Image (cartoon, rainbow, N blue to C red; front, top):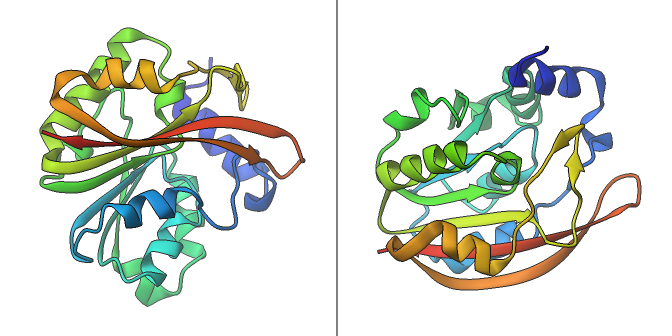
Length: 208
């Protein structure tokens, strides 16, 4: 059985970026929620499950200076680098890590914004979700933000051949518990490159 790393490396190797089922040419509404945090542009912003997303390029254009792109797939991150010029790519911290068995990501400290549009809904086991929560508690600073997007309750049950855990605002609030305050949430229907619709729920929490 192929590992998760092999699975995602194969996806990014075999499929052009713009044909991937989760591809967005501009990362809305993630950008809006990040901007709503109103942080200084040198604050640490982590994009977990960053893949070959345009979000990093979008954030560089907005002047963010301390970006971390985290993904299990080294192929994805190399493709993301190729979307940028050499000077831009050098300004980003590129980290290959498995969020369910983390190492490098645990070294990041004082995270002001943690953004996830791509990882959490793949964590179908409670143990993996608790590992993820422990990472947030260790790396996100007090008053820092977590922006979490996940497949909604009426969303897909499988993505990229893998099962997913669908979520509501309430289930995400329950997951974060008393250590995080829900600041805002919204429903969003994403239209993927093939034209299919993917209902998402977006949330922004602040760590107490």
